[in-house]
Each structure stands twice: as C-alpha cells, then as structure tokens.
Amino acid sequence: MAYGTAERLTAAELGARGLGERATLVQFSSAFCRPCAATRRILADVAGMVEGVTYVDVDAESHLGLVRRLAVERTPTVLVLDADGRVARRATGLPRKADVIAALGAAVSPDAGAAVGNVTAERP
Image 1 (spheres, one colour):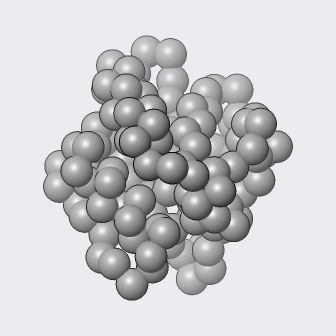
Image 2 (image 1 turned 135 degrees about the horizontal axis):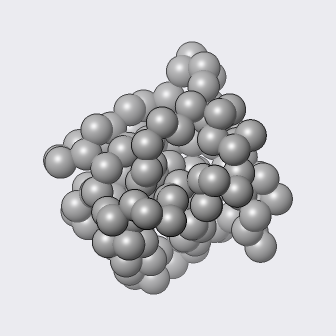
C-alpha cells in the first residue's frame, strides 16, 4: 500500500452492505487467529456505541487480492476508514478499546492524534 496516498475502499470490495456514515471499522481476520475473536468483540462494541459507525469483518483467506493490495501481513489487522472509505488509521494486533475509540475519533476529526497502546499503529 502506498503510504503517500490514502487508499480508498468500497463496501463491495469488503463484502459489506455499506460503509458507515461517519466511519467504518474493518477487521481482517483468519479462522485460526485467537486474538481475532477478542478484536471482533471490541470493534463491534465500539461500533455499537458510536452513531454512524459500521463494523466489517473481512475473512483474509477469502479476499486475497485485497489482502495483497493492502499489504495485510498478519491478523488481526484493523483499518479505520473515514466517511469516504479512505484508510485513516491502520493497526495490527489485539487493540485496546480506548485505542480504537481514539483512532475512530482521529478518522472522524483528522486533526486528532492516533493512539497506539499495545498495537502497532501505522498511518497511511
């Protein structure tokens, strides 16, 4: 993924019905990924707390083209998309709920900083 430009994703590429009105939390997961289940619970919980935010779980093995395009090297990988579907934040590993909320805030308001916590965060 070219880090000089913001990658834009569509609902169709993610296999989702639609993107969130304000932001979308995208998780790339795999069948035998133990931290993926906990990440799924955290992201679904945060999406349920924040109006206009959608959560999408993408099976990495079923979307290899997208995985390669986005250079997803491990699961879970979490992307925070802004309202236009652009990747605003990216992290790997099991996130803390507070970090997800902070990253979501940064996607909705790009002037806010990215929280890192116990995940490896990258900014595209």
